[in-house]
Image (cartoon, rainbow, N blue to C red; front, top):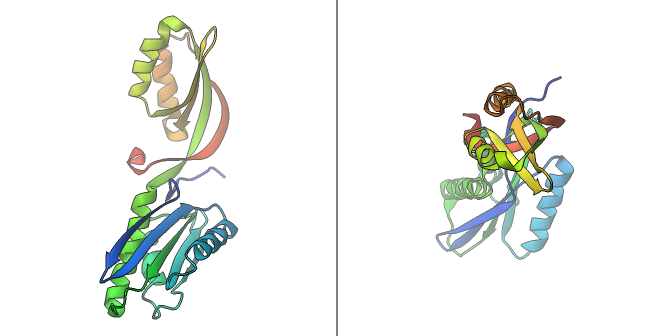
Length: 215
């Protein structure tokens, strides 16, 4: 079965804000499995053991097959549910979000809590960045030094990511290109190099690309 694109977080990150003297910290990270999500939750609980609440949600699987959330002592439906709804609205999976709260002495009410935890989830996702996991081909490509400037200029306009470039007696690029763009890229590369460059495809994997790359 061919691999299908799905959205996830690009990196682990956090952001925080204050609402009526309560401090909220939104954390997120990509997680491939439920075990990874639970381990992340455990890390956050240990790091913020003095916090009033560590509310969370996670979604696992390219088809969002596993969804879990917890209010962690907040009134039912005011914390975990808003977090997971933000994740579902952004379409992210294989990801976990924890929103930590330090109570500041002012009650927020149910509506205020929903807004605060929604904001916490949004802050976490924005800090992490959302990318799309695309089926991606990885290539090795060798060129001679006289073609270096021309090749670099060409690649700037191509839907590829240059992972590595080494200089020996030749210049060797390690490139990734989404499988959907592969045929077009190879065709243009062949035309540009007049058939003198033959990249070697050696791997197909899921890799995260910035969200706008797929639009």
